[in-house]
Image: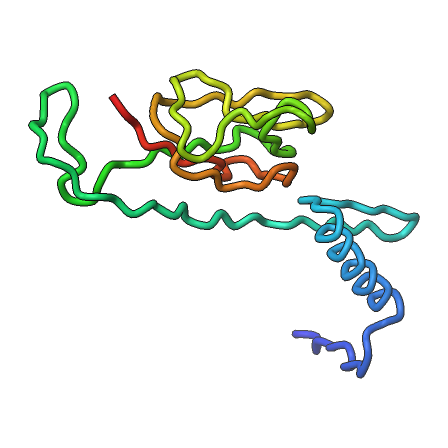
Length: 167
């Protein structure tokens, strides 16, 4: 014989403890935005709240191309520029941290838009946990675009530079 199931009565307002958790969550979300954090967790005797911001990486903007004189494709280097212009190489953040264009606040930036760089040349620094990590160019070419402002927080995989590869 089956026993009847009892459903709890519907309440007009959530219990006072739930309101406290909701308010705490809202305040922590504000702290994330204010301090530029990606995650924060708070624990008290009876409540533990963790708020994490998911990052959405915007697609990289490709600089317009200028029509060039026709070139012949070689087996080592296929001709890519005929249809959509040259392919830009994206240098991404290898870690979460703070992006710096120069080695110190008074120093000149490592690179500017339009500078020619060599493969392995330092482009910027990302500070992570008080360690300064030099970020190097993946390819030789010209810096087409710098996508991050100085001293801004960056996420793992976030595009930092667009480089127009050159032979």
